[in-house]
Length: 481
Image (cartoon, rainbow, N blue to C red; front, side, top):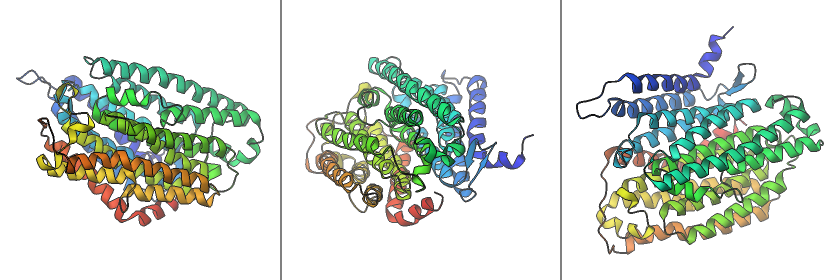
């Protein structure tokens, strides 16, 4: 029998799930306007934004009630609801940015918003899972939506290539995850993460379990875009719609990290030794250095952000290698900051991007401060934060993760992280220098969008607040670990 209390506990999931069904009905039955455009094209973006904000606000309001529901299959409250807020708020910003952007490319289809809603539901299932099968269910729901969204602009060859490449490599990565889950189940005799966590110490003596978890981590290394499983990232980010590339780099990455944290929870609660630290340390080191060095050579701004995304995956993996509570808290804070500063950056790129993918080279940002001072100031703020310059949110995210590494005697890994951050300052500040100290030799026609500007300003506000109150937010996160 369904417990009404449990229904209330999983209300964010129900809000999104019900919203998807309502959106499908609206798309099917709303009449076509006089100009030939469907009414749903105007209704769905605002309906999606209201739905995401409702789920996000409720998640924050019910954050203190941490428990499990539905026979320990789903966790509610606590850090699960912090992830729910990150996904919902991020998706609301993407929807706001998309209102005018998708009209520019003629991809103003109703299924665009329904796919975003469905992908967020998948992310929420991943973050709230207390069973390996729920993680897999959420992962597939999110991934299938992402494959379609990447190639939504069907007339563009690069979008078709991005979609196909993402699908093939994503399916390949899913194979690792499924095989890993099978081995974990074979050795642990259960898919319940609560039972696996309680027996984690004994299970780490079983070679089958170790191999299973390593395969699981390899599969998710694809999803978080970590080296050497990053090969899909630059082409997919470049070929996808800019607003969707922002969603891939933030929501998708946060959902994947939430699943890894859940599976390795016994390590992070300081009860078991981190036997996976060597693998995670190597992945973190290679991701940071590769992403930062290759980003320097990029002339396309979306490819530059794609390689920087690989470097950020490396910084976040340091928190996993640290294997302590500070590491988890640092990862969650970093993901919150990264989501809004990266979405803000992609939002400004989407506004500056012209038709036929013009204005996407880094050189096209020269002299932006004299033509659009507000956009230049906001982009500078996001670049400073992504570079990890104090007192912005990005600095505190890296600081907490590096401190966690030092506490776990991985000082060398923190030093590599600082070195990689120093390299990244060059390609982030290069854009700021171009905007403020160079004059443009070509005419730049900007696509005016009030909704896009509102989304970017909201993202900048959250980044500033995270930079002003990092201690309070970290304390809140730590209280639920």
